[in-house]
Length: 499
Image (tube, rainbow, N blue to C red; front, side, top):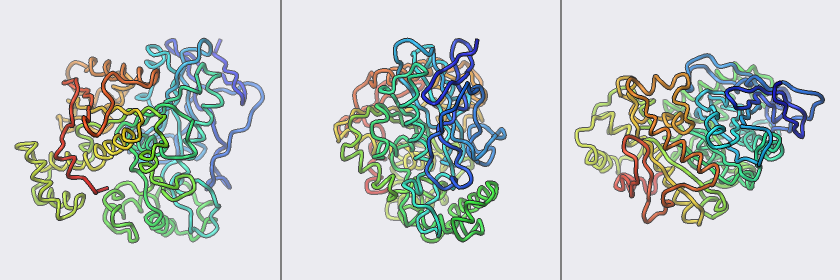
């Protein structure tokens, strides 16, 4: 007999695989289509009888080949669904992990094999939830100033509001799947980690989770209303519409085309009106949460620093070579200098190059650019979130993933997203082997990392000292596993005062 979960909204028929129950494609909000395209998510109404929950729902609209897999992605605007894996529907209430997928706020989905919660269920007695949310312009277009646009608290943050709606669904429904709504941990990688940092600083999300894991993402992902208005203006121009009516009726494919054109313009510097201090941040990711909207009135880091999230336990970290995933080509010295100037400013670029070179004797121009852009986009934002949470009296632990990929000629190192199958203990998932490369599987690293994540989800604790601005203790996961004290301090100091 297939498993049946009796939820407050109705009965769901799932399926069992390898001793774990899966309920997939569960709607947590009304499809954001038609008149609801530009509006906040609305709770999905209750139904009569049993509803099949055996197939993952479609992803949010996106271009194929940009996420963890190059395979075509089945997408639809009717995308606000989630998936639940649980050891059992009964027994003592279990801790819950809610995973928010990454993908630069423009790609990704919850139903990816790398995110399989089977090991969390069988080894940690944990309920895992993965979610979809609106992406790109449909999730993060700033509507203020667009003629005829509806007034909504989610303007510029509809994707974040979707995530909150999913968490509210978890609060109200997860007990039917054997989960404890009082023991929820949110987690995510890349844009998912940035979402975690954003939710820590979002008043509407307060009380919906007790733990937070941010992998290669922090509380820095927002943009200002001025930059968001510039992006919105360029987007409407590329879409060829002048008001909200045109946006509401445009084909999803046309929206994706216009979105890609705006991103290309930002990457080449052809997008006037952006805040000068945000240009380097926005060159590759222009659709992201907007600060100043009703949902996100203040920068999340300010809220965290003030102590509003001090009751949430935080685990945060980054990978050693995040940006090798994008920095493929070799870089000569002249090009390296220009890239350093772009990120750090002309006055600091020379000193910064010398500092990074001194720490990496014989490093190529590409190696130096990877080290600097990894710091800029990932490590420094993680440090700042950890500092803010620790200074406010909140529990926070920091990790560093350093296991280097043997695939692709070894050029990736400890690249962006590589840690995901280690944290989930899914080294055998499709596609992971290409990143691992030849040789024995790094089972010991995965075991250590998965055990740490499992303990954190269950107890909101880690087995090394909390992070603070004095000791700066960091746990390393890689061929070397142990504690680091204030790694790369001179590089860290270079970024003081730079966003």
